[in-house]
Amino acid sequence: MTKALYVTGKMYEANTVSITDSELAALVSGEQSDDDFWENLQELHDQLMGDSEVNGFRVTDGLPRFRASVDDEEIAFDDLDVDYSESKNTQRVTPKLGAHVLVFEKWSERGTLTCELKHGLDKKKLDLSATAFTLPTGEVRYVVEPYYEDHDFVFGDSWTEVTRTYIVTTDSFIIELNRA
Image (cartoon, rainbow, N blue to C red; front, side, top):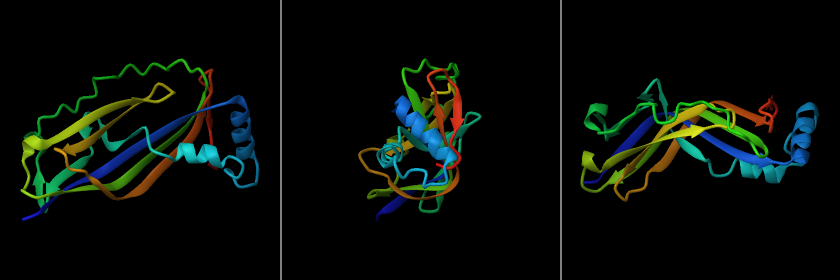
């Protein structure tokens, strides 16, 4: 009998794109204009909204912000041999930037991933990959992604909670893009 492994919770994703001085000027100008923000910057928009550099379930205060279940039977975190600590990369040192960086961050509620299991759940085959992602500001975001043997998880849905788009200049100045 086929069963479904569900992982649901609070998700985070981010993407960064290096930009030139002229793209920086166009983005700042777009922020101050009444025109469509991305009208003349479609290629840059497509790069920024393309595949995320990091995407997964949030880890806050050392705890994952998701739950896993097979059909309706919840899997206890204690049953999984994973270290959720945030001690891997907590320096929060602002990196030296060789170019300006356009950043997109998105926090979501009720993110859902599913995986079909033909033979039921074997907890030893469920793996969680923890990632510490350092933003150009030096801030570190932590996410966890589930893996189950050679099965693929399918993204179901999520509710966008907050998005943030901003530029970090080569001298570490942050320019918020509220219209983006």
